[in-house]
Length: 521
Image (tube, rainbow, N blue to C red; front, side, top):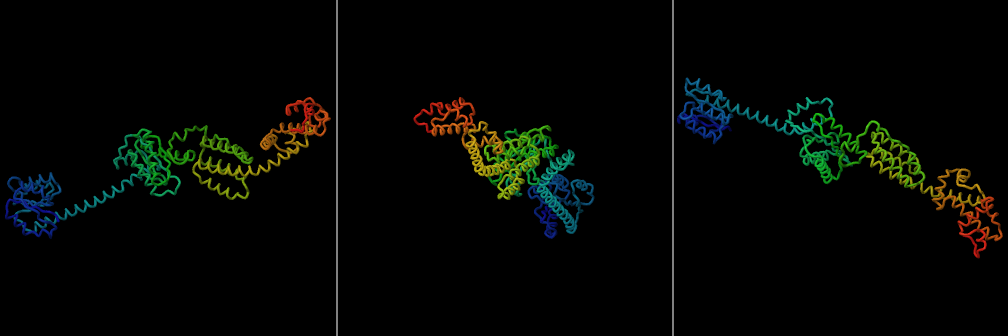
């Protein structure tokens, strides 16, 4: 129901109109009357009617003055003016205040009802329009955050967007970006990304970063645009707080890339910068904050500067040398990290190295190893790849060490047998045994012999010859020194034999033979 007030200085008119109008049938109700303009104005302020039916000529404040005063206070109140004949010029001045209904006295209930019906219809239309506009505004208010998200997404990914587009959206959304801006790009780690996770990161970031201007999600990433008002230590602190808060509630890690500051119109370049920074999580590991400084400024001369030799790792693995293999792998990983090649190039090197290692494995385990190859291809960080390689290298080193123990013992046994049979050979040497008898590398054989016996090959030969000399003297106390020298590979140099004997035994062969107990070592 719309509220109606009657104003006239003639009581008979007020009573007549009050009684002859069926107010409810018109969708109205009569809420009060007033005998003049002054009293009417006060009651209008108190009762707030929707429609006022008023005479024009009244003492104190006439109808026209009442219309002017009410229009200034509440222009939505509608008026129906009643006037005697000849007052059209006077009444027409009221039209400037939106008064459309002017009725001549005497009038009847039909004309008043018709005027009220028209006003009620106008008021209904106004309410319907207000409801429609209000609904649109509410919908727009709900949609604006999504529209802003879409604007940011388009602005950083669409090459066709430029400064003119930004000016349009700045005016549309009343953006006021006076300072440089930064972009934060969040990537979740270690799980299938769900919308709830992205929503949570976005909300936590908006809560903890007071300078958030816009935010959106792009694929599996959350992108946040902030005004560059915080100093770097404080900005870093808040970014780490975002990560810690998200980890606390969702038990998932997140990697964050932070751009350098720049103009908002450079947002697309800043976005590309954060994407490139996130790529370096392959080298720097998951979790934490990555800036352009962390990626390292590389000149063209550094790209591709990496010397790759897979044998540096495969050789110590095949030899079963744990420490050497671990060091070779560490050197490989350090070289890849420092080179910071294209990620796909780095993975190519890693896969090539891994395949060369697999060829050294136990043939019965080859399927399991190639399963690891599939796992390696899917890994997203060099740190994770290194852990998989370390595990594989440890297994392969142990496999070859176990095989080589038996193999090495057999080889050393052969060397000892050769030495025992060749004590009289003055040309006996490690090189001769390795190259002419066992067909092996002399350096490798020397290291293997020392590892197994604890003695260098030359020292072992000397001790074996001196031990054999004591056995000769125990069997034949009259044996000649020059005879022993010749039989034990010293040729025709008995003096040298005596010097070596004294160094080993602490006395000359002649003195040794005079000892009461000369049973040997």
